[in-house]
Each structure stands twice: as C-alpha cells, then as structure tokens.
Image (tube, rainbow, N blue to C red; front, side, top):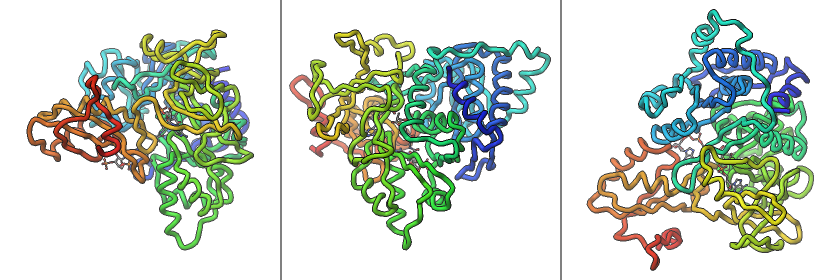
Length: 512
Ligand code: MCA
Ligand code: AMP
C-alpha cells in the first residue's frame, strides 16, 4: 500500500464526483471544479511529462505554489512519477528558498506566474544546476514539449513501496536553518488512516480548507484524508471571514479545519453579528498547529453551539493526539493518542514520569519520521532508545497528562520556538538576520502574547549607532518571510546575560 493506492480507493468509489472545488479569494485565478477522475487523468499526464523531462524515482519535485487545483495535480503527478514532493511555504523569500532548494536539490521546481518576481531574485547557484523550473500557468507548452516524439512506455514507473519517501517537509530549525523531515508513504498513511477513523470521516463529507497545502495541516490532515475517503475539498487560497461564515451557514461544508488565529478572527466576527449563523450542517470544527486559547474555545461554542475538537501534531510526526470525536472535548487539552501513536512524558534524565507530572513528550509510532534529510547528527540528537530498543522522537514539547481524564495538556516548548498564527518562527534565524543590518550589534528575539496571532516576535536590539527603523523594516521584508518580521523593536543598552554570558531571554519576555 502506498498513498496512491489509498487515494485510488477514494477515487474509485465515485469517480465523477467533485474532488476539488476551488475559488481564489483574491480573484486572480478562475474558479475551478475537478472530479476525481479528471484529477487522476491530469496527474497521470503531468507525471508522464515529469518522467520524460528526466524525473527519476526518489528525485525531489518542489512545489512553490499557492493553494490551487494545480498544486494537487502536481503533487499527485510527483508521486505517480515515483518522486518525493517538497512543499515550500509561499511566504518564503530568497534566503529561505535558496536554503531549501540547495538542500533538497529538486529535479523540478513547479511554480506559478505570480511567483516569478520572487524567483527572479534567485541566482543560478541558489537554484542549483540540476533544477528545472515549470510554471503551472504555462502547462500546455511544457506538456507538449515533454511529450513530443517520446514513446509512452518510457514513462512507466514502479509503484512506491510503503517504506519509500513520499514527502520532504521543511520545518524551522532550532539552529536557524530549516531541516527537511523525510516522511515515508507509511508515515503519512498512519496519520491518514488514524484520522479517518478517529474523526469518523465519511465519503459524503465536504471539507472547507483555507489552510495552505504546503504544511502538514492543510496537506495531510485536510487534503489527504479527503482524497482517501473520496470526499470533496472546497479549496481556498486563504481565509476570508465572511465567505467562511456564508459557506458554513449555507450548508456548504460538513468539516472545517483551521488554526487558532482563524477561530479568534471568526469569534470576533460572530460576536458582532445581530443573529447567530446556523452552523448545524457542520459536523466537525477542528483546531491545531498552536494552542487554542480556552476563552476562544468556549466563546466559539457559546456563539455557534459547536464545540471545537483540538488536536496536536508536528511536521516530523503527522498527527499525534486528539480530543475525541464522540466524548468530551476539554479546552486546553489535546486529548489522547491517536490510534497507533505512543507517547511518554520524561524528566531531564529521560526517566518516564507518572501522570500529573510535567516533562518533555517523547513519541513513537508508524506516523513518526525516520530522519532529517542529509543531517545524520540532527537525526541522532532527536531520538533516544529505551530499554527495549524502541526509538522515541524527542518532540521538544513540554506536556502533562491529567491523572483523572488521561488527556494531555501542552505546556510550552523546550526550545524557543514562537508560533504566530500557526506558523513557526525560530528566534535564532531572525536574530542572525538582524545582526547583518548596519549598526545592529546584538539582537534577541522573543515571543510576546498577541491577541490575534497568539504570539508575535519582538526584537531587543543593541546598536552602535542610530538605526533607521523604516529602513530596517524594509530590510527585514526583503530577507525574511513577512510573518517572521519583528512586530516591535526595543532598543536597549545591553542584553541581560547570566554569569556564563548566555542571554537571559526570560527577563526580556517579562519585559525586564
Ligand atoms: C499572515 N501574516 C502573518 C501571518 N499570516 N503574520 C504573522 N503570523 C502569521 N501566521 C501577515 C502577512 O505577513 C501580512 O503582513 C498580513 O498578515 C496579511 O497577510 P495575509 O496573507 O492576507 O494573511 P491571512 O491570509 O489573513 O493569513 C492568516 C492565516 C495564515 C490564514 C491565519 O497565517 C495561515 O494560513 N496560517 C496557518 C498556517 C498553517 O497551516 N500552519 C500549520 C503548520 P504584511 O501586511 O505586514 O505584509 S504546523 C503543522 O502543520 C503542524 C503539523 C500541525 O500540528 O498542524
Ligand atoms: P511544526 O514544526 O510546524 O510541525 O509545528 C509543530 C508544533 O506545533 C508542535 O511541536 C507544537 O509545539 C505545536 N502544536 C501543534 N498543535 C498544537 C496544539 N494543538 N496545541 C499547542 N501546540 C501545538
């Protein structure tokens, strides 16, 4: 079994049903509807072209695309061609792109016309000599070119085995540069099959999906489950409050998956309406990727009568814990392990702690990745073996299991990760970038609570001369994805350090 065989089960149930209903909230792309059969047929044509262009089994095919049907076609085509798909965050700019492309060395980079200005900034070295760039907006031209005069049998590819790699997903690294999590078909299948049963997916489900397909949440939790079940995805290029409320109250979706920031924004909108919209046809609202504040959880229920199901996952592991579909969903918790996932909370010495005590969460299960791409040392640091020889992944998340309910609460992170609107920011990366700006000698970036984004990065700067804030802002925008840009700058004489010279960030976080 591989991902394509799982998707075939969904497709063959009702090939003429709508797989993807797409509309672009920005109005730049035309609305589209694709049936399962036509999605499959196009993916096969694209796959044949990919193979004829030289994509071989195990090669990487990177996607730098917004949410649109062509993302799904290109992804399925990459799998059909036996390749590994590398999704890239669309907000990434030259420095971030250059790192990922240099590390993944894709044979193909599939993109769209709207991204050409960003890609134009890349040099040949950024891109790598072996990477060919294709725009989905010029698909006819390259399909024709690739297929001209080549025999059809040259495109036959052996189906991927379960242990072969399906996805290379980049996740922010504690050391600044992001690292690629290597996910096998098996890893992803484990998450998908676990969720299909845990959340009682049905083939007549309709999922409204505003989340980007370049992250696990949109791609695996959303798209994969729908394809496997033969359910329809209403794919959006982003989140629009009003359209969301209209679709959900108009019987247009049975499922809605989002990050806490989206629920915060929905609550704000709903609280201002004179009459509460009727969401009775939506059977499940899910939240994940960052902590859902209990206040938003409860307020959403008060306004809609619907209790959000909160779950917990990671790029490296797919989904791990979930509140129950049938049963009590407790605010501030992520519930219990999904089928086949094992969790253990340990102290600093790695000893397992009893329920009720706080420690780092370790995970194992078929869903857990095997290694970071081309980074054996980082891989080795990220796993420990127990007395029985089981390999546990160190999540870096601090957790406690309630001794009465057995539900887990996430308490924070061992590393300094900031999560803004469901997107990860590693302070070290921002700090390193800031100190390349003339006049900035030292920088410390910390997360501060933010009503909408959950957390926002704030930079404390030690400067040798006056710094032009507007110029610094422009510089940040050119060097970093915009969500990583510090939202506030605080100029200080010196950063607080301990006797070892290490910056004491907790003093900055408390405003000291
Ligand atoms: C957009 N902006 C942000 C963020 N998103 N700033 C901080 N944090 C953010 N997350 C800024 C832009 O830079 C821009 O700033 C301004 O907001 C408007 O941008 P726009 O694109 O219009 O924003 P939006 O469409 O309203 O986006 C908000 C969003 C989005 C829908 C909440 O951030 C989003 O899709 N977040 C979810 C990402 C996700 O799927 N995460 C899962 C990964 P300016 O105007 O200054 O330029 S984690 C995961 O997959 C794990 C496994 C898991 O458990 O799920
Ligand atoms: P990523 O590296 O993008 O895969 O993000 C994974 C991280 O998001 C996890 O290690 C958690 O810290 C965080 N996360 C995901 N879901 C939740 C949740 N429901 N509550 C709190 N944190 C979460």
